[in-house]
Length: 232
Image 1 (cartoon, rainbow, N blue to C red):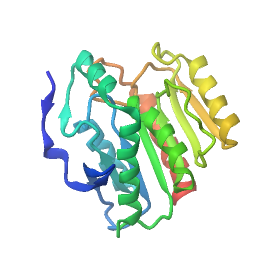
Image 2: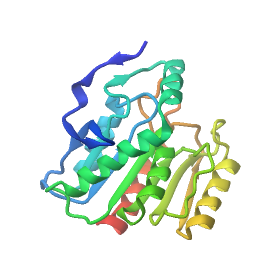
Image 3: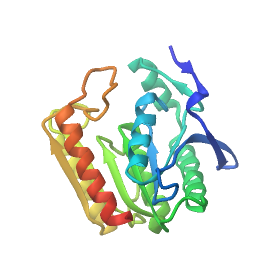
Image 4: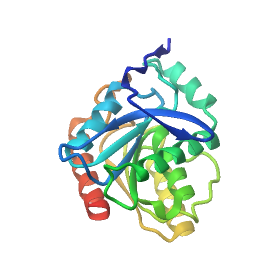
């Protein structure tokens, strides 16, 4: 069953004509480049909070918007239902509000943002980057896909994707075709890297047991290097 727990929410912001909620994590220095982290279909879980705090420890001002309004689950069927009931365009508009909020935040030193997302959130990374254009400098999807024929021509970010060679839900050939389409439509670099792992290999709390420590560690280091060269 889904669990409603808003304890992770610590900020609100104007979003899509209403009030959005999320988790904001500040770096030790108090200021830094801005980064948005987008949840998996499980919701704004403790895993996502932990990822935000890890990025903050590396010097970023990190915001994870709560797309489910405080609801989380560890049941795959419930997670699938909640993801399917989430309107894509509405969620992207909510995320655009998060971009506004973070770029206007006094702690953010960068003029452009990075966006990192996982599974469902990785698809939103690509869709948001295409919508927001020059405001997004770096887009990092972890094992995500865009299920419709989104137009990537507006995307101006560089893209670094992390995918599992053993992922049955997003086979490598499908991921490579997506990378090719992003590059063809936007003209921007789209490098998708592959790991000897399955889906959700970065999630050390994955209810389906797909976590792969070595792959997660390698992808983390590569992501930090990518973000530093594009955001600082």
